Image 1 (cartoon, rainbow, N blue to C red):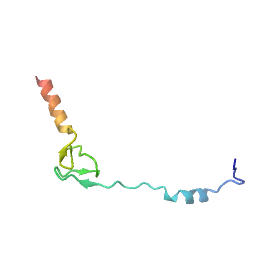
Image 2 (image 1 turned 90 degrees about the vertical axis):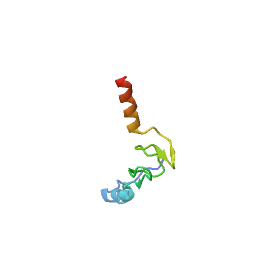
Image 3 (image 1 turned 30 degrees about the vertical axis):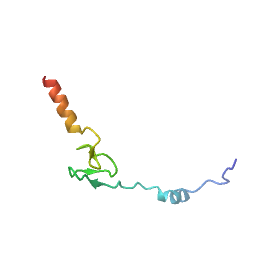
Image 4 (image 1 turned 135 degrees about the horizontal axis):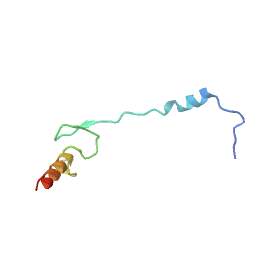
Length: 71
């Protein structure tokens, strides 16, 4: 098994890690509700993806729960 002969300096380790940066996520606008969303994902606000309703949106869930508690 390979074992280093000498300890690597702090500078060498830091130079190796210079490419480990966090990237900012790409964001786009939902064509239906104009909210900022992650591309290629269903909109959590209106529940649509590519013109079809895929998810039950958060607002609809709250309304259903509120109606159920009233009756």
